[in-house]
Image (cartoon, rainbow, N blue to C red; front, side, top):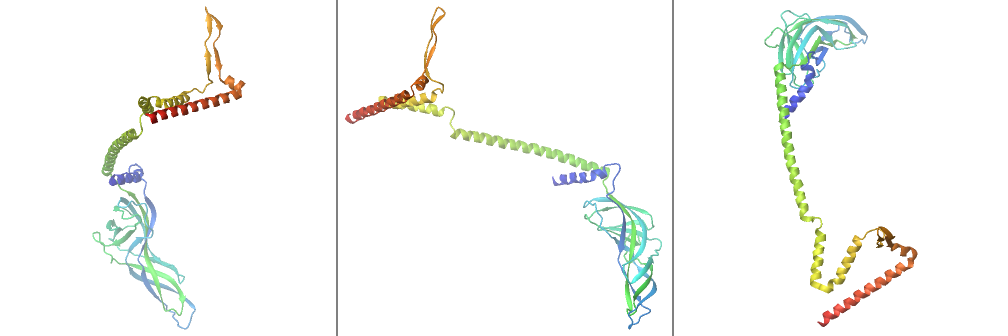
Length: 360
């Protein structure tokens, strides 16, 4: 899966550059290589230990220098481990002096011999690009080692093995200015190579097709794994759904269970206790009546009286709410008398039954 993800990321990064007909260079700039410094000791011909006045005099010298330089700024746009197609055009090889207020009008040149070869070092790779010639374009391929990498360029008399002791002779001429009581001064000189470098990520058609095949296989494998995961998840969901439904059946009774239970319990006590259970049965019946009672206005309906299709007395309903409205105090008295009668009847029945139990 990691390889597939890497290939997908790689294809996304490179598709706009590699698969299009008009390839965009990842890097396309003028560049400069700065070499190691050579130290030249300048002797003051007007040395005077007792004087502090400045003296100015010309200086000229020919000195050996090895032309091998590293790119002055890091390269960018690399994919680590990617193979890059490169093009290099050399423009000039010159001398460079560190800026100093004591030296002015510095100039230098590097007379290079014939049959020199251009070498390029990229990471751990040493590549011979061909014979040295200014304004020539060299093409080569190299593998990126890290995201911020440096090219090193060098000139050698060999095209098969790099030799770092190849020496050319450079002529330095300048106007020196420093105090007369300074006997010598060090002049730092560098070789400096300028050119134009560009590179792009390299993927040929064969590798491109292999990457696409790997991505296609990876997508199919991922799809299959997703289907498998969905099937397993569905089985787990189905199991827990049925499990909780069955568990619910163990603790939650079916509809009507309690109603049926209390009916059977009421019948059982009625059969066993006989008349002793009559008050309780009456009370239960009374509660059921209240539960099932309608919330509408109650009363007595008298049917109509008709003869031969002619209604003599229409249907009449006597509403008890009429008594409440017309005789508000009468309803309360009826409720009170009814309560007294019912309580008295229950107490009398209880006294009778208790007496029968004690005597028998």
